[in-house]
Length: 291
Ligand SMILES: [Zn+2]
Image (cartoon, rainbow, N blue to C red; front, side, top):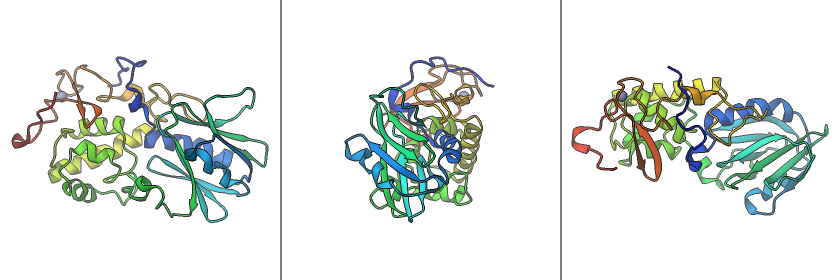
């Protein structure tokens, strides 16, 4: 069923944001480099979004975790260095060879390694907070359950989605029903679950299918080290492989892999959305009247 993207070099820029599989891939590769090392120096680009990088100087990194799309660098002084990659953020081992105009922060470790945060579009964020005190980071503070944990169940998803009348996809992107799902994996999971992205109500069987689809789509993408459309690279600088497995996101008017009718692309709450109008039907009384 694997197909290549029809337009691999022309994704919507706002839709290239690293989601859970991409951040998890970076976490796995970054972990052995950073864990156990003391941060002996740091540098930051002079804006408040990155300035906190230097607050981690002197701390030893115990481990690197992840919540949704956030990297949680656990420090030995009961604090966390929280890193959000934004739209175009890249973490890598610095060469220090030549100046990089897109470098936003860097951390020097006690073995001479330098971890660099490059972010062309500057939607990323760095914060140092007391462990598990996320009140200064509202999205993280209100983040839904981890999709691959036991906290995320079909019942929790049904409850959360039923509590609002906003479009199902918009609710998924809010990070509240479940953490880590962005535009790519929302389109993919909704297609697999046969749920219309603009539906404003969900049945229990649909929520059960969507719960399964979210877990399967994310787990498979983690296995493939994420989806590389344009900016995303793993910590080792490689591309992910999941772009070859996409069946909805970015597929334009390609035939649906299930029913062979042309997929449809709409703008839903300002996000480009691709779905199959045949397989993913709206409830009769709530037809979507969009493009
Ligand atoms: Zn279809």
